[in-house]
Length: 70
Image (tube, one colour):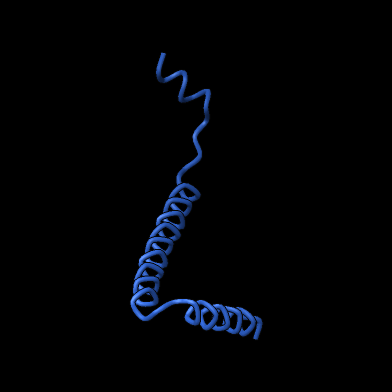
């Protein structure tokens, strides 16, 4: 039930913002917020995949890597 506080806060915030904007401004803000949400979600997914790949990569010995170069 801890998520209910977040839902109530966001709903209250949305109502307060809507009271300050006309219909066109509200529509633009809603569209931009969806775009922001999608971009943040894409970033989170990419971070998760990158971290997952990094954590699953075999560990290499730095000395071994340097000796292969020389």
